[in-house]
Length: 122
Image (cartoon, rainbow, N blue to C red):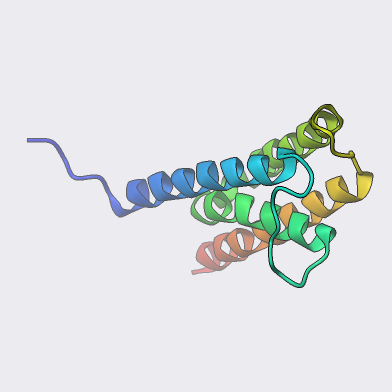
């Protein structure tokens, strides 16, 4: 009889699924032709980049806080790749977008680090 997945395993699978979905949404939103995607939110482009990358790293950063360095590095590499590809699809690459991606990564990893430290103290 197969064992049931543990709560931690289910959490990891959900985090991976959310991260994959967020990756697809970010890729579409940043690589679609200009004017194709409108957020409808009263935020600047930089705010949207930061929020998107916060959402990208938050799920895995929460369930696997010890992976924070790798998660952050992978997310930043993804953001950098987007900026390199954008001129090929009629968009402009901006250092400001890349910086906003990094800010979002940092903010998205903080809750998992707080959780990790809090759990270690208990």
